[in-house]
Image (cartoon, rainbow, N blue to C red; front, side, top):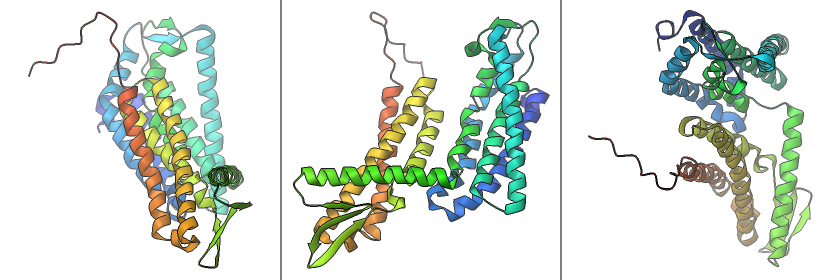
Length: 331
């Protein structure tokens, strides 16, 4: 990718600098990708970021050229002031977070708060650099935020910048709290379903007491890995990538990401119901190992298939009444 020859100098240098921040962030996050299975999908993040930027490169060049055109729209009035304030705040806060995380890492080694601070800092700095280094225009046309040519250019980098927040581990306190909330929901729903079906089951905290099998106690413990946090982050990553590549409109991108979160919860709940039913019949030892792992992979696979099934619906275009469909291109 020849950034210097394809883009104006300041924007090309800004992208090179942003790439350097992302490489540092990837190096820092790679520790957690190795040691925490919940975030092992992070190894795909640099590859998919490069793919998305390469795939959008013609659009990036066109958006940069549109910024440089005479009378290119720029936010004016209070909206221009708001954009300048947000951009400056993102740059200053991003630099503060990045330096804080870097010093924390240098002094205390790898840590979840340090990695999160570095990632937040990188996102703020990169977003601000893209807006500040957009090509200038002679005689700009006053406009609103939604039509500002600089924001349209920066929006093409939304996925490459923000996806790092998904692959960065959450702070331990937040992750533990989220795990606890998901655990309680999963255990409560499983106990309710079995009770509604007339199947005796007893909830003891995060443990489900099932009828004995072959005279042996049959206790199923719902662990943190089964709470759904792993499938939640992985499905959020998958939904974000599919939305970035295959969906154009912003509200449809948001809808697909929300659908990914809902599907992750529903499929993980189905997994917990399946494992509990399997243990109900065969004993708790029968769900260990292969059955447990295959059910986990099925959650991600089922979510991805569900999202792929939603793509044709989100990209469906309805023609107004009386308008003929566009003619097929000639060979």
